[in-house]
Image (cartoon, rainbow, N blue to C red):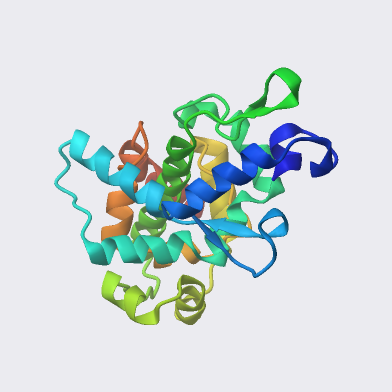
Length: 244
């Protein structure tokens, strides 16, 4: 973490005490979880969905949305947020793509940029996460509508189904084999990316399709600029692509 924040080759080159103290504070309020038993300086941590859930709930209240977050929906979103599938979207390859796509985000550099002394400045990180989650939710709705219009067999999934499974990675693996006929998702992602700029999740497979619709309908409203207007357009693009 110190290497990324300070732009140095080794954490030994900087004073890590402020970073460790900040990490302790985040852990105390439940925003970080320790994932191993190593000492604090060498330990690995993962973020929790709590900041995003609070951010999303405030957004829905501000917009006076009819969509509400209850405890079951929060648990379902947490399962998606904490899945290996979702977390791998933030690997280096994806980070290189996202900062250049500021027209669909609430800030020009959602990952951050180097400031004086090489330090990394992160601006509105929750807005960035909400935008990513919003795009994934938009893809979920677009794919579901498109597949049904094409007459594909698509398993219906609900929030209670996901909660019962207790793991989004296992949940999507269980259901993706039920989609008939099999679909080349890479081509669909590429088409939506090239035309309306949605994330090019070429390795995401069918995962967005198995986000419960009521969860997708909430998350698509999270970004500063909701993706609601892209939904119908996205379906129309895929329908045109299918006839080419």
